[in-house]
Image (cartoon, rainbow, N blue to C red):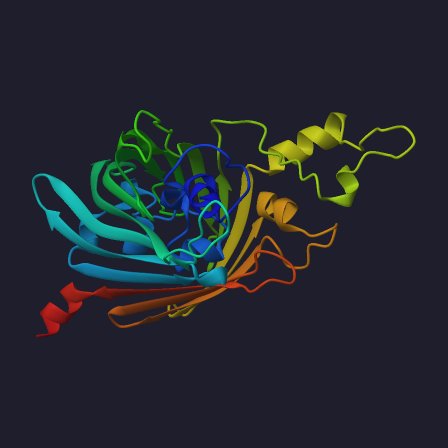
Length: 345
């Protein structure tokens, strides 16, 4: 039962959770997005792998694009998705995707600790995304999601939508996106009558391509629906009360404000060489603060990745360092432009 409750309310990417369900909807699936430190991007360059998190990036140029993504997570938790894009001249462009997370197998016990039968846990989301260019500078998009969660004998169904808008400058160098994610509800809760909220997020994404250097900077503002994202860890030595005064050291004034503000900020940079190879790096301040151990952070919060574009194939890999002294997360994403293959045939 403890394991089940942990899956229902826990979160892999951060510790600001504690309430809500279907947290996997906000996990980073795209290796490119993961390399730049976040779970979405505002880069309008016809990359179908970015549309699951930002449907306003869906364009007609993605027609017949197919994408696969797989994330090897510490602890035997694996997740990913498959997506396919199709465009129609009158109604817009669509991307259908199936997103999943498999938590693996667990050893079951009763209340007395006696072994029972093993059980498994997994969650799925079928998403249909739609995007349309309203003007040369502004596009909109939306995702509709059907969600199914199975945690041992407990099952749940839900629905959700994402809504997004993206502004692209005339020279295509600057992009800005506003996104509201996971607006919805449980239709069938795990426990009768106990409905839990979905992991709603309000996000802003910015990206700027330099004019004379093939370098693009990205900045993400996440969880704007909630100001204070700090997490109090009672096991951290810094949070143990002073044995004499009983006081706990806390940040105050400008230091506290800066810490809380930076927890909303994710930074990333992408350097592209000869339009074929891309090198990426990201920094997530909130993740670094939450996952450091006893004041030692190592490379926690940093992510590194690379991309390779060869003809109709686009391969991306990201190495994510989540916590000092723990196994790291590996992201692999492959996108194939089937339209180019059809043209050649």
